[in-house]
Amino acid sequence: MEETKEILEMRRNFYAFLHRMYLEEPPRVFVDDMVNGKFYFPRLTLDEELSEGFRVLKEFMEKRKGKTIDELHEDLIDEYTRLFIGPHRLPVQPYESWWIDGKLMGQSLLKVKRDYRKAGIVKSRDYAEPEDHIAFELKFMHHLCEEELSASLEKKRFVECLNLQRDFLNDHLLRWVPEFCDELYECELSDFYGGIARLTKGFLLLEDAVVEELLETVQK
Image (tube, helix red, strand yellow):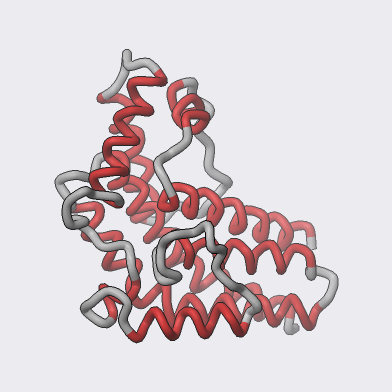
């Protein structure tokens, strides 16, 4: 059970990290950790995508040796703004509807909202983006990981959370995020976020197998 708990905590923490990277520009405390060598990820079985993500982030830091924390933070704010805020048309759209329906506010948005409601989740009025934004979808998975940890001794709820995660991965995240990540990685405006894109894709592709393995383990 201790090993299962470690896996659940790692997944929750990684979803929290990814959600934060897409929600808004990286915080200054994160930049401080990068500059001072405290940047850390939970233990993962590295595949090609994850390894590439770490390589890109390491290269990003090597190119900026000598910069102050404030200077590097400003670089990340600028990159995030160009990629995800504008003012011009976004180079890589972070919305499921764009990738599945070919337009913003499409049928995919309605479907993801229905799936959130089934799980008892309603978007806060303080959150301006549509519910099919990548940050919101990652936050939903983070929420389910939290639910799992709370229900780890309650088998029925634990299995329910895992089934919700498996369905959400297959019905939403895995249908569009890998392609989104490939374009974000290739985008000429991506530098730091090229690494985040590779980490996101690699982690989600591993998730498919991890959730299935957890389900098999708990149902034995």
